[in-house]
Image (cartoon, rainbow, N blue to C red; front, side, top):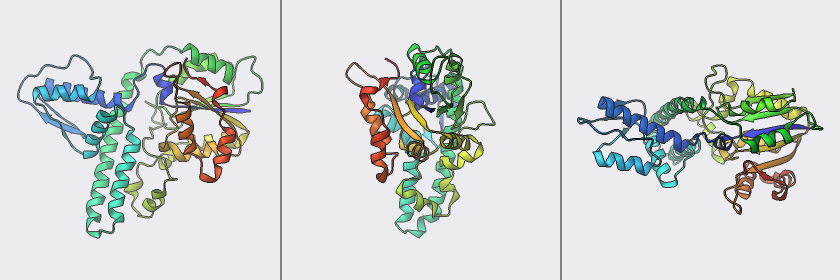
Length: 348
């Protein structure tokens, strides 16, 4: 029996890495503000500002957008954002204390498509321009995100004893029976998982950085949206506008052989899926559908996030997984998901 382990952002968070999109946005705003205070001006692809006075630098990174806004208001400083999309991300982060940049990008793209769908031909050129501007903004965000992740990639990461136990018990040691090939499908750009590879004595294991890896030109970062099952995707594709499709993950997968390696793994034998820190959100819907509905998928084991002795995200995770199955495959979903009584938290 092969084993496929899906590693998502929750895996990095379990190692105290600040890899939430909220952390990235707060870091970027803080860094931009520092430049403004030190040099009296700041300007890049996302924002700009000028001041004519000496301001006191904030003592540390902001914990919330509210802290950032309060500091800016006290000094009468205001950033000018080059695109409304990035400003909306900041507002969403303030309202929800989190944000999914990839999903928000798709919603912004969808709004532009819906404007065209209304049939106002006079707006076509303006919408084309707005899509290009949105993509330029998204490219700039991706560049800054990589810059941020590099600041934490080299952090000293300690092996988590709970996770180490899972790796040894579930994915192979000298006494493990019936273990075939093991693939760690890493949706993160970071290499946190590699700290655990030495504790697994099996030789038939590999890490597939399906969305790219930091500082690896041969495996570039894939950052975008991946829900081709959405009813609007086919409509968008029929526009015959490549700019609308530029940040769909499917086209990024062609840059490497990672997706083909995954498909070969899925086709090779029966496999058991383990979910470690992956949200199973719709931004990876097509890829996850290929995995979960594959004829060789026998089980989906959730390592849930435990928030207290009585609260966890197991059932929320099953709802997210449900969205990856087509309507006609819901009965299969109920067969392959391992029930809560046979599941354990990623970190206790």
